[in-house]
Length: 202
Image (cartoon, rainbow, N blue to C red; front, side, top):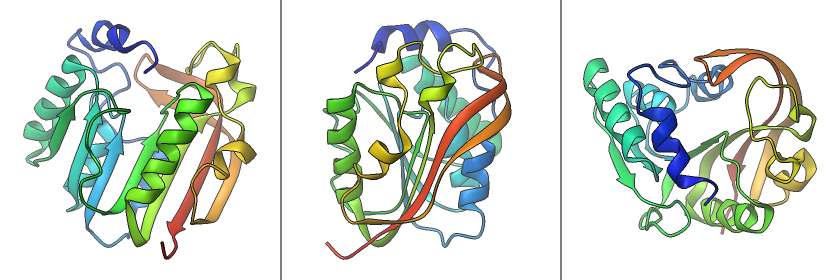
C-alpha cells in the first residue's frame, strides 16, 4: 500500500486531519439509501464510516493506520454509534468474508495495478443490487496543493476507474470542480471524480 507509515504521522495530532464531518459527495450519495452492511476502505479517521453508522448502517471500516483507527473509534463513541474497524493493509486484510449492501471508497489512491485489483475485489464483495460510491482526486488535481497525492500515477482517470469494477452499472460518473473544507488535509478548490453505481447479478 502507498505510504502506510506516514498516515500514523498525519493522524497522531488531536485535530482530525480531514475533519470530522463526512465528505459532501459521500453524504449526498448515502442520503435516503436503505440501511445494510456497509464497507469503507482506507477509512482513516472515520468521518464517513461514522456518518454511515449514524444513519443505521452496519459498518465495517478498514485502514492500515492505528492512529486513524483510534480516532475513528473515538469519534464513533462521541456520536453514540458503533462500527467494526479492521486494522491492516487493505490489500491483504480479509474484509470480504460476507457480501455488502454498500461500499464507499473516498480518496482511496493506490498504484494503478493494485488499484484495479482492489476495485475488482470491492465490486465482487457487493451483493446484487448493492450500492457503490467512489470519490477520488482526478488527474487534473496534480499540483493544486489542496489535497491528493503529488504523483500523477496515483491520481485517477475517470474512464479508467469506471472500468475497474466488473458488473457495476453506473448511474453517475463525472468529474467535478468542488471547494473542499475538510480539515487541513483537504482545503480549497479541487478536481474530483464521482462515481455512483449498483452491482448487477454476479
